[in-house]
Length: 447
Image (cartoon, rainbow, N blue to C red; front, side, top):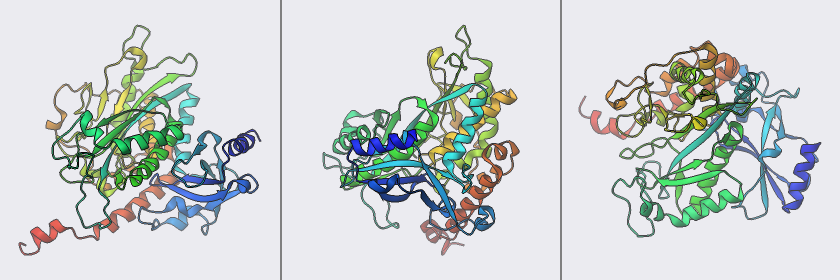
């Protein structure tokens, strides 16, 4: 009743006329429906279970009906009042609320990616631990492109000229898109997103926004909201924003780096630090878990066929499982920090991830490392790009590994792993039916 009262007061105080009832799908995009505000609390919200089992192209997994156990029945939705936000781009005064998905008997739906993250977080809670994370989101601004056969181009900025050179951390390059940036920050403030700094990344019209460290579930919700918000801000300025991992062949990919630490719920101390300011045994166990289990969860860090184009040498993306102190060539970087802020930066996830699954995956790896007392390799001090590529090179290869590790299957739930694998294999097979221009150019008359 308290949550209902909080929502009712929020609707009245903001004169909201319509509510977006949102659910994250398997890709991390918003599904749901619009409900008039005056009816929002008067009726139970429901959506078909099938929306949790759709591919990025709108198809369904090969074993959808078998795993679902129903003939596409309804699931119950429960609004989370902690996710109430205004929708600043809407024409009417509109609010949005993220909903949890429940089965008809009121249990957390096993196919909901938000519930998967909650499941992992409950394991930390049982140990008296609380993860603290900070995502870094990279994305590209591009010219509007309605023809998928055309190569993407960066938009024209205020100067009237396109970018042609690497502009990492350039203030002037970021200012080229000042109107968009102002809109983005205005929307972020209206939606109470904890965005922090903005930089221009190395790609043409590639930007990065950092979030303030905080609660894992709250920040997953914020990233879910942020990606949608950025696309809307870009459309207002007659351009697209894309979170594809590798949208342009000659430009670097876009990542979602996740900084992570763990604090004790008892005394709020960082468990990665000892009393005398050294890195703790649990810190090394956490890295050991990331090294051990990352190959098995790579399809959560690289969930699309395009994701694997990002893992190439010398383009700011990791290619192996090395870790190092303040070494950006490694997939696991330990930034310089005071003991209170000791943390690990996971550089494997792309910007195209489902935020709930990518955060759940990195926390699951670290949890298993701490519980099993896993030891990491020695910290890598050289250029990890000069080492062998050891990561999966395709979505199909990564998916094979996902079902191979029982520890991961147990943490995420066997039925969820089966569903996710089947959904992504459908996408992979559909992609495989497309003949590329490279094949036509080099193989048509030469083989």
